[in-house]
Image (cartoon, rainbow, N blue to C red; front, side, top):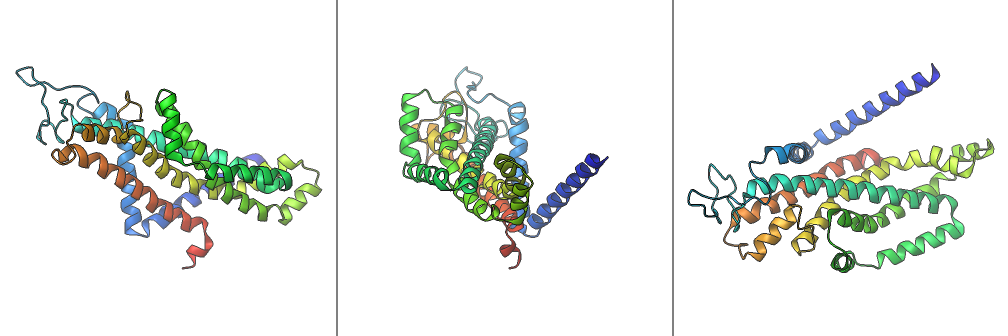
Amino acid sequence: MAHDMIDHTLDATRRWQMKRLLRTIMRYPSGSVALAFLLVFLAMALIGPWAAPYGPFETIYDQDEMPVRLAGPSAQHWLGTTNHGVDVFSQLLWGARIALVVGVLSALGSVLLGTLIGLLAGYFGGLVDEIIMRLTDIAYGIPFLPFALVVIAIVQPSIGLIIILVIAFLWRTTARVIRSQVLTLRERPFVLAARAAGLSEFAILFRHVAPNVLPLSFLYVAIGVQAGVMSEAALSFLGFGDPNVMSWGLMLNDAFRAGAMRSAWWWVLPPGICLSILVISTFMVTRAYEELVNPRLRKR
């Protein structure tokens, strides 16, 4: 009975926090528009491959069995075709799934790793903190793009490898912020009481300290989505993405190599606009969530 009451209380608290987040987002017109765009991108990622009229690499032929190259937007091809006769609208729908998959998985992985490292460094302090923070400083000194290009040039490029590379560089900021938060939490009375009750250090860390930093971790998930999406797009545009998977960065790379950046606007603008809107929308929703978890912003 007691467990049922606790679970019911936790569910009610989560629902209240979700409603509060939605109210905070809806308070600003930009937040409402951003949330609507994110829902559109989510729908594109979920149903895009089934809604796309053609495959992402499928060449379209006319009645004379000739590829429909660089055709402008029309009723049959809403966003025209590429120099290989591929439907741009279909590529755009297929690319939405890759953008969200890379963004979400890289953000979750980096925040999970960064939160764990920050918890250990902040709670145990001393030599553990010193070693972890010096390794973090070293990680900050390694530039992402040159390192990623070298690794991908050695190893066969894939979406999984790009996600791993993004995770390997995004955890640093999360770890530093979580560490600074834990440094204050570990001296709170509830931690001292738990230690006096005989709980082990790891039990105190993960049962009492970790739940208090999770809202901050969730904030960096939203921030990590932006970095993951843009990192994948940058690598794909430079020709170091997975050539077997359609993404918005690969669409821009194909247009650049075909010399169509200025002539075929219907090929260049859609992926560029989608990338911009996705990143800006994520940022606007992140600002709303930051106001929710930061009391100083709520007082303004």
